[in-house]
Image (cartoon, rainbow, N blue to C red; front, side, top):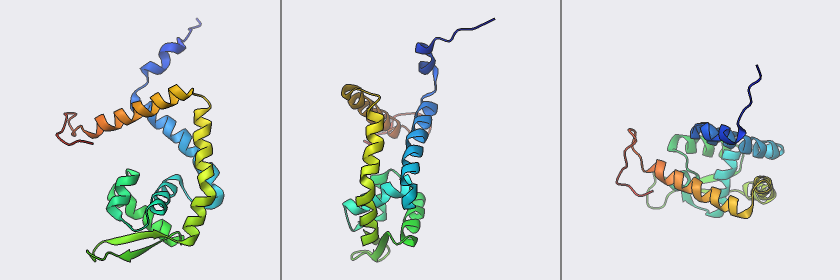
Length: 161
């Protein structure tokens, strides 16, 4: 017996984490593929891009700007430093912290690859109207803020995110 699938209802039954994860992996995979000739991953690229945009950030600021935790940020910075894309200087006020700068090679990589990131965004935009794209970003921001304000048990916290 043949069963027909109601495609209009199919996506509304997907768990949100699965749908977001699948979409993230596809978009990130596309970006990864296009970045591969440069020997840098999308997460390294986003970190390097933030450093390049604001030279002299401390690790905590980089983590906040990229939405990564401290151990992940440390790992990414170590990889970028080994590749010669960034360098660190001891902090002036607090010697335990360090300021992070992009090297000329790092700046060059960002200049050469920003158009790749733009092309991935354009590929996504092609399947949406401008209004749908803006709405999608608005909804994703709302989800980030809402989920970011929940504690481990799913209750609203007092923090503003």
